[in-house]
Length: 118
Ligand SMILES: [Zn+2]
Figure 1: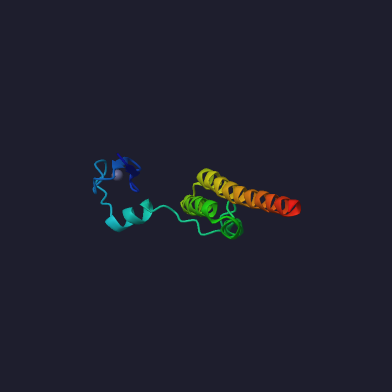
Figure 2: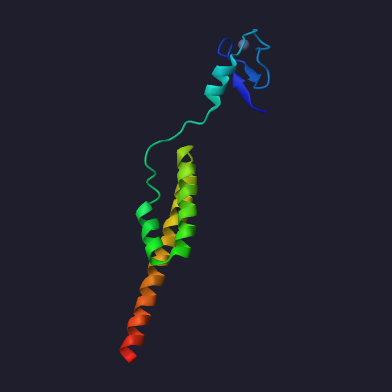
C-alpha cells in the first residue's frame, strides 16, 4: 500500500483515502497526481552511445539490433532516474556494438588472408 504524508499534521495517510484520518485535511486529486509522477530526467544519458549503435548497424546489423534494444532500455531507465539500470543496460548495448566491430575486423582479416592465398 502506498502512503503519503499529510501536509497539515504530517501523519501518514493511505493513498486510497482522500481525507486525513488524523486532522481531516482534504487531499486534492490533482496535487496527488503531480506528486506521484516520476521526475523525468531529460539530460543526456552518458552510459550509452548512439554512434556505437550506428556503427554496429553498418558493420553487422543483427548485433546492432540487440545493441539498439539495450540502448533504448538504458535510455528509458535513465529518464526515470535509475542510474544503475541505465549503466547496466548501456554497458550491454556498447558490448554488443563492440562484438559487431570485432566480428567485422575478424571477417576482414579472414578475407585478406584468403585473398592472399589465391
Ligand atoms: Zn492530517
